Image (cartoon, rainbow, N blue to C red; front, side, top):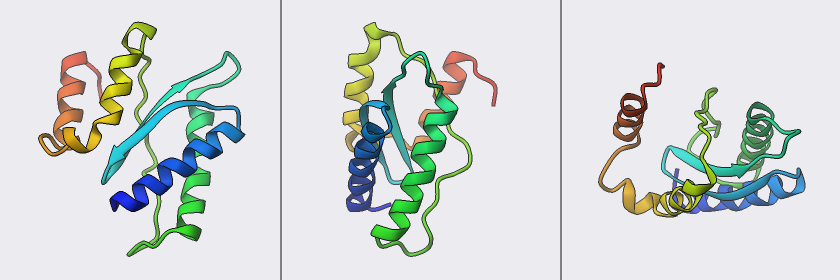
Length: 121
C-alpha cells in the first residue's frame, strides 16, 4: 500500500470510528498492516469494532482510492490489551511505524512478539 493510500485510509477510519462511537486514539501502519489504539466502552467488543472498521474501510477504499487490484483486509486480526500505564508508549510506537519498519519487517516483529509473550498461533 502506498503511503498516500495508507494515510487516506487512516484518516477515513478515524472519521468513521468517531461516527460509530468508537474511541480510536491512534492509527498508523506500514505497507501491509495497520495498528490501532482503541479505548472500548463496556458495551463494545473487539470483534464488532474490527468488523465495522475493516468492512466499511475496504468498501470505501475500493470506491475512493486507486489500486493495482481490488483492496481487501486479511480475514484475521491480532488484538492485545494495553494497561493505561503503557498507553503512551504504544501511542508513540504507532506514530513511528515508518521509521520502525525500515529496520524490522512486520513478520520479524510479529514472530518476536509471539515468542516473547508465549502466544500460540
